[in-house]
Image (cartoon, rainbow, N blue to C red):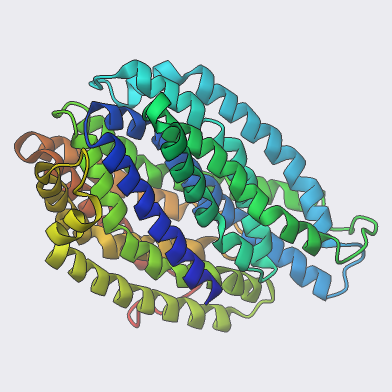
Length: 435
């Protein structure tokens, strides 16, 4: 319930953020430039908060907690923090610096046909700071969820969107759309601040003892393989956005903005349906750590079925009411009726891929819940990305942004079908026919 309430609040503030962006800056070349820079926090959120880092760290913390419960000498949880955080933090800083330095080349690669290249570079450099803040926020979230503490992790998007909205209204008159990029930097810091006190309380609960005998070297190669497969899967999944913006950058100004607004609204049913899987992922990981495969299987089967029912209801609502939803949310200020019509048309097509998005999000967790490296999800995602790129390149000419959205829906549906077909010994062994 805590996660549901705060996730809905975060989603509402996310809509308010997009409404503020549309009202203040419309859907033109300026917002296109910012949304190319927005690729950085989108990637960082997927890799470091929602999918990548969480898929690796939640099973690792669950295993450490299971070992603590069995009376392993020392404190396995603190040993895990000491072994991972000092290695991850310098990596976050290095990547953020690399993104800032390479921003001009990055913008040219992401959107070669973009009208305002310099503005996109400025915004990209400002948003690069989120690699560090999102990395720390994702680390805190994974650790707290493994400890069954959900309040602070669920509140992070409330803090994040509050920072962006405040920055746009305070600085928008002076700095234009750059104010939204400043808000990303501020919001990232607020995400860390919202969780750090709770995590420190959890880590102080036990005095640090000597490092447990089996907490070190034997697990390290496995952990590195796990991080590698998880992060590559998350990068591959998020590259759908890169394909969309690359193809849309050659279309008339506003195309990237229409895709963005449509995607943000259409994905709300998927986000809410996956909320249950986010909360129960630590339960599945702990069951696998305890060797209780039957409990993990039952949990995954129920979660996938319920999430699918919820997202289909949401998708039906999006298809039926797309013009009214977009008009209600965005049609004011610089956002015109023509923008409403274009965005609603794209949103209806996006909705066709929501079931695939949900199945991928729910099943990918089960492949990594045992804390073991698995290459199958990456392969399934690569096939889906290839389908997205091929279909998008073919469809963008005759159908424009609608063709790009259709390619997205087709590609993610292919990946969902492959992940479901591959369930078995390499993951939580769910009963595929029953699901």
